[in-house]
Image 1 (cartoon, rainbow, N blue to C red):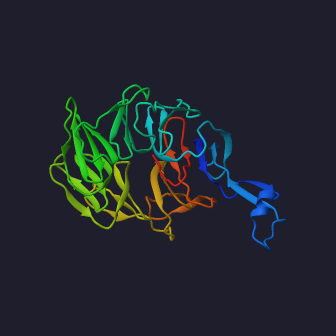
Image 2: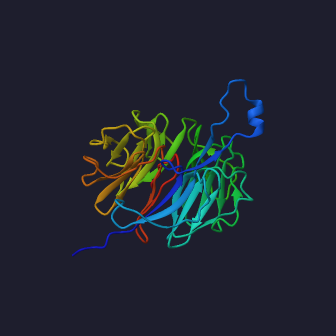
Image 3: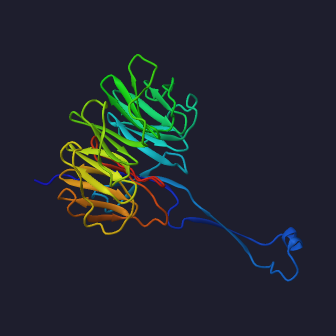
Length: 341
């Protein structure tokens, strides 16, 4: 039986190839007066400005072709994170705060910015209807009313560069430049779980906790009391769970997989010969989808081989955010960031 392909939505932000507004102006009298003797002043002056675009597209063929369906987000949007809240998408940016989509993911609403100290969001996490946002150099804030207002959770937090967030049981964990901290419900005192290093990824898989750090991948099987570095070869930028398997993405082109809840790891980037930055990975049907700075790839054998299914033609690094579930799969392309969720 044939099944209808899931739709994909794509949001473009930033500068694409060469969409320039070019203005041609003749030299003014002031220009001629200021010009030194012998200078050519009769030639035209050309001013080129790269156009900033925000557009959403839909694909019915796994990203091979795209149809524009509209926009609604600000120009020059700098996307940093993507998460889901039910059927809605939550989008964090580096310059406009946080946005919430409608249930169909067709339009976006900017959430409250007046109660946030900055619009630069460095980390985003949604759990049990609460939106958590790490603010650049200014700690962590939470919203319990879908972004209508925000409350600071900083309290006695000493290190306010929040890189990752995880809700576990009755405690909120955050990864910072100086390790992990935890805040139990009903308290205002953060406890220090580890004192180093920078932690950019946090996951709970089974009874294990996995931390992606600048010094490698660390594992704890006793609720964070003790940690062991199980792989020092990769400086982690993000962690993901796919069908119970853990995938770690490095700050370069590294991509590794653990099938035993983080205890051992193996590379899964075979077949991709170049060293373009890998953003993230997600499962769609029986296939793994990954995005990186040059395009979108698909694997039908859990990373043993990859096929290029969509190649980017942009003149500078762009990113892709991917969400699955609900009405299908959505791609959101964000300037300078490659993220899938």
